[in-house]
Image 1 (cartoon, rainbow, N blue to C red):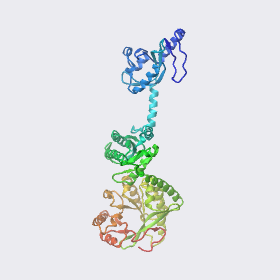
Image 2: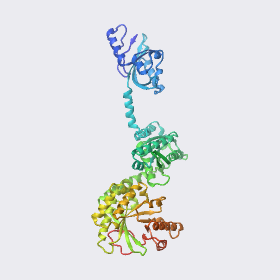
Image 3: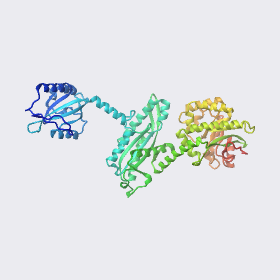
Length: 600
C-alpha cells in the first residue's frame, strides 16, 4: 500500500512513502492523534462507502458511528452543490490526486454546516486509489460571516431585494451570456408617497411601505422580471431576452408594467390604523448590445429614438431613471414614460440651466417685475411680483423654464428669500410715495420654502428690517403646495396672519379638492385661474365656475381676484359676475418693479 502525501493539483508532487520505508510508529501515532483531536476524519473504500469515522465526525453530523458506517457521504449531502461539483471531485481523486474545496453538509437534525475539505487518495500496489481519507475543518462561522458580507454588499437590508450594484452585475451577466443579440428592457419604478410617509409617520412606516411594495413587485418577478431596489424610493426590474422585434419587445415590457401599476396603486395598510393611497411613477428603456441584431416590424433597423445600443449597465439604468423622473415631473394619473434619445440631451440641458442659474443669482441677473392688480373701478390697489431672468449666457430665460427646475433642486428657497427681500424693499420705497403708500405687493411661495424650518420667523424678520406694514404684503400659494403637509401650511399661514401678513390661494378651481381647504386655510383672497377667465365670455361652464368661486368667496368673506384678464368683454363679464379685483394685460404688462405704472 502506498500513501501519497497531500498536494494541490497545481503544486509540487512529494515523494510517495512506501511500506518498505515506514516512519517511526511513535511519529505516526502522534500525527494521527493530532488529526483525530482537531479534524473531522472519515475513510472510505474505493466506491465511497464509509469504513471509518472519528468522534468529531459523529459530533458535527449528529449521526452515530453505527448510522454512518456502510453509508456513502450522500447521507450528509445538503443539496446545495450541483451534481457537477461532485463529478469533478471524483474525476480528481480518481486520478490519484488530492482534491480540496469547501462543502456544505447537512446534519441529522437538518442544520447545515460548512467544512474545508481535503480528500487524499491512498494508492494500492498498482498505483490506483484503494481508499480515500477525508480530513475536514469546520468553517461554518467563517462562511456565514462571508455570506453576511456578500449580503450586505449586494442586497438591500430593508426589502431583502438585490441592490443597485447587484442589478448592474445582472445586466453585465446578461451581456456576457450573449443575450445582447436582441432587445432587453429595464424598468425604474418609484413609490412616490415615500417621502410624505417618512415625514408624516416616521422612517419605520416608510420602511413598511418599501417592504410591502417590494413584496408586491415580487409577484411581478414571477412573470419574468428580476426585481431589485436601486434607490431610496426606487425599484428596478430587468427584463432580458425580449426578442429581436422592437414592437414585440415593447409590448412585452408594457404588459409587465401594467402589472406593476396595478400592484402599486390603491390603498395600503401601514399598521396602527394608518392607510394611504399609493401610486407609482414608471420609466423604461429598451436596449440592445449589438446594433445590427435588432429589427422593427420585421424590417432591418429600428427608429433610433426608441431604444439605446450599449454594453454599459450604468447607461441602461441611467436612461430608465431619466424616463421615470420625466414621468413623475409631468404628473398625471398615469405616470409612465419610455426613454427617448432626446430626453438625454434635455437632461443635460437642465444640468446646464441649473448651473447657469446658480451663476446668474451670484451675478445679479434675476430681476423683479410687477404687474398691477386693479379694483372694479380700474384703480390700482396692488401689484404682484414676478421673476425674470436675463442670463448673460443664455439670454432671456422664461420663468416656466427655470422655476420648475429651481423647485426640484431647492434653489427656489434662495430665490424666494431674494424675492421677499425685494418685495419688502419695494414696499419700503412705496411708503415714501403718497400715491403708492397703501398698495399691496404679492409674492408667490413655493412648497420648498414652506418646508424650511423657521420660515415664518424669516418673513417677520425681513418685514421688520425694512420697516413696512405687514398687511401690505400678500403671500400667494397654489393648491399643489397644500398636498404635501396641510397642517404645516396652516400653521405657517396662521402665524403670518397674526403678524398681519395677507394670504392668497392662487389658481383656484383647478384642483379637485380646493373646496375642502377653505374651511382650514387662514387665507383672505382667492384668485380665479386664467383658464376660466380666458373663456368666461363664450363658455357658459367657465362662467358658472367663476360665479361659483365668487359665491364661495362671499360665504367665506374672501376677496376674489381674476387673473389673466385681456379683453374688455372679459372685464365686463367678470364685473357682472361679482369679481372684486382684476389682473392681466388689459391693465398692464409686467414691468421692472422700479418703473412707475402710468395708468391702468
